Length: 126
Image (cartoon, rainbow, N blue to C red; front, side):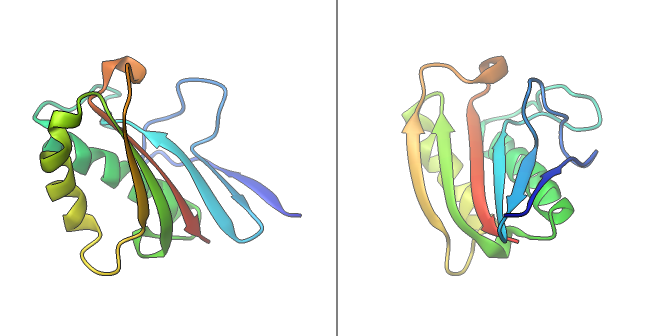
């Protein structure tokens, strides 16, 4: 069994005892990303659509550092602060997965880190 942790300055650094991603046996398990700007460490301004795009850009950077990409994502989990934001999140999300989108679960969470409106994690082929 091979196991490697991933860290890239292209995405926000972990704010706890976890890795941005772990590559194991040909799979990338990316930790949840929230809409933090990796350059400033601050939450990006804007609606949940803008914030979803920032989250997916962060995930794109993590996946690239792991030798993967959004086109290799098999499964995502989306956590929303408010399920009323589903349509806006879904519209932004669709821009990143225009063809053959991955499997997905979307959940309303009582509270997300740093009071984010959206968090997304992914599992991808390395």
